[in-house]
Length: 86
Image 1 (tube, one colour):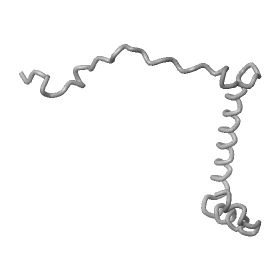
Image 2 (tube, helix red, strand yellow):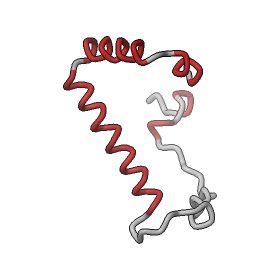
Image 3 (cartoon, rainbow, N blue to C red):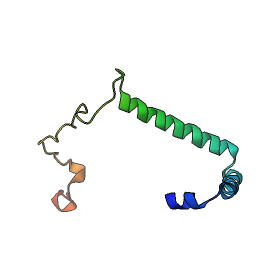
Image 4 (tube, one colour):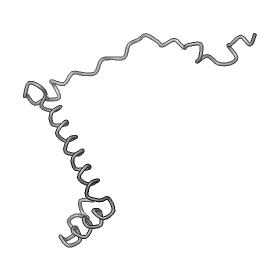
């Protein structure tokens, strides 16, 4: 994809932009831009954290280990051969 951008001139990019604008419309493109900007902003906020310091790989805690408690199946999950047909 990066090679393709290098091969396109400004005229081709302008034509592609015009086609995208006609297909999706201005309001949908504006909403897409707003949503992507919000996602980028939230991502940056998660990297920086509430105290203003950048998080590093060492400062990020590992997720908790899975517990060794096994889930017991409920009667609705039992197979038909185990249920009493009476």
